[in-house]
Length: 277
Image 1: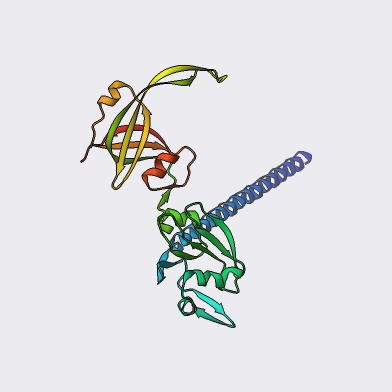
Image 2: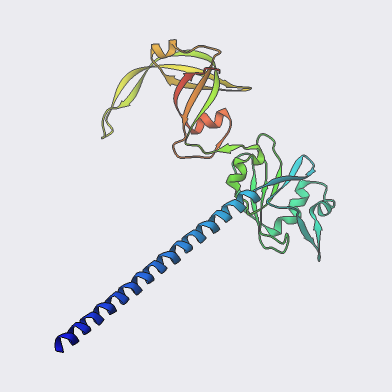
């Protein structure tokens, strides 16, 4: 009888262990499912935010005042508070003869965020929502090239705006890229003695190198650069021919898409004769 009781107790103990193990297993499975649902939900929300940003990231021309084209960035309409009522910006602008007059009227409600060294482009942020009903960023273009456009933007990333052509900038920040230019002229500058670093400690020695001046054209723009080249490389260059120029933008700087900015900010790695297809 005692043996039967012991066996019965052992059997009950084993059953209890199995029940506990099953319960823990179910709990772990439930936690994994909850975690997966949470991760998937978070991903969907992030994807939704990205999609909505890319959909909302739109620019439309609103009107022209003087020589300034006024654009709305991520906005369907724009109203501005005048005394106690909100007017469409067109109605508000009707009271002013120039863009300068407009910004003089707004200056107490704007903070200057940045002034660019491109001739005087200013980026403003609105001080409060009372004037425009929204927190806005305003770009007042004033470039050396004569661009005087104005952008009123909601949720505006100014870097993205410039990359998309705001103020006529057409910026990009690729770290490696190619451009096709015409080699207009090659001029022999002669041999010069220059210092050359020879070890990690920074010791130098003087060596002689042959310098050439390359005149490179892109449509109406041209730039002259100096390069150290050997005789074989120089003989391979043909004046008036198109070449593919390989550039490195080491630090990912924001570059204006023109020949001067590209050569000033990027290193030229290679020149290859362009083969038209």
